[in-house]
Image 1 (cartoon, rainbow over the protein chains, first blue to last red):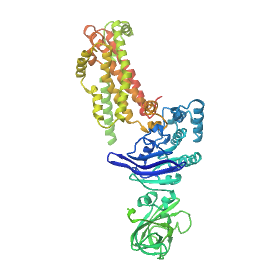
Image 2: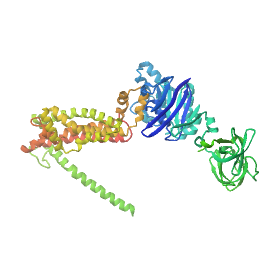
Image 3: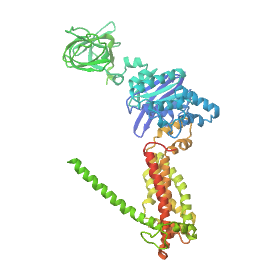
Image 4: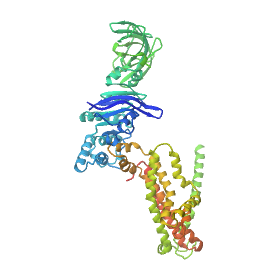
Length: 362
Length: 268
């Protein structure tokens, strides 16, 4: 069941096209994240859905009803901002009660629903405090309770954890996810943090320059990025340019500098140029002399970055290409013994490579 | 070496500040001390102290009328300036960009125009409208110079106001008016308090424009000015003392509130 749908939504600010024809459907109870760099139009999209902006083109519907011309206060949408946006002159309870007050819910029902909402975000004891007396995490929980108490048809969150420190952020992310599942909330989340997006989302929609680049499950977006932009935004990656030299049983042999790789490539033609994406965590390094072959070659460790749970190496191949490789810090021999200047064997597994089509490779 | 030069510069700055302060405040101190004289003549320092002259101005018909007129005008003008000023500041903040600067300039121009020019202009129009020498006329004339204060202070508060709180209110079901009433106005309260105090003081002290309009009905500043020419007894000092005290009191509130507001806390 579609809860929210955008059809060809565009927003123009003077000569600038901030949102460029976005179509997106969010199912009831689904958690979708709009992910992209700042200025990609994700916040504008959110503001179009919330009703603070009117689309220049296209349609927005909620539960099958068009809402482009509905003012924000009639849209039944809960909003959570990065800046918390609490009402500083009201107590926590009054903040949460605000939406009910505007709806004419009073007396015992209002008290009960405010209590329930505060219970949901575990802030019951702080009902009579003022926002300035709370920590950032508590303030954002109040904002969440305030948005949830009106039982919104859609919950919109605009980088809600951006102002919090990393540990607290992780904690609140988990809380949000738990709540969202429990209440089956239809949620649209905006962030520029790909790790956050992958942790929370059922589906991720990646935006770039006002356009949707790709939408899909976190796993698909990470492993089968459709463009160079998506590939690079979702995580570190090695991009290698190569040429298809042979095709056999649905596998293409690609020569990229010193490396020869065999990858599953449908519809490839011999002689075609391809761009290969290789995730660093799927490049294996081994000490010792190099054995040349398919997916294997030798290299020299150019630099080592110690990150605690993992180590990242930059390895220079014979043709000068710098290849990034990440190994988890298991403490085992072999992985930890690799140091700068060492000659190593580079091994790239078949399932580590994805090709980007020429025109999308950028 | 650097520290020493800096230290010396700091001493010089302190000295100059103190000198300026004395220059500005000394006349007020002298006047205040004289206003508390128990003698029947003006002298500095007074031979003896008392509140005789304060009692006098509150029992004297002429002074009483002037004080009440000035307080009445200021009390009328203050809420009106806040109402119009806030509406104008909101329009400037949210309205279309085109013509915004021109609108703003027109709104605050009475503050910049020489009082004599403004007073003469208002007199010409008010003669025609039969608004001279009347409470209504005084109040309207004062509004032209008090509204700009409200526009500026409320405008400054709005400029630093985080719109997302208002947007949160909208998403929670508040119509535009209710969002402004329940969220925006309480949050820009420091600006409202400041604008109100400025408006009150400005109206209470106003001399030039009112002087053009007044014939028989005299506001306090005009009454002080007029009485200078035929009597020089301590009642003038007492009236001036009263004006200083009211102004100082309001300014203190303003400074105190301003500090609280700039400390990031919101007033209740």
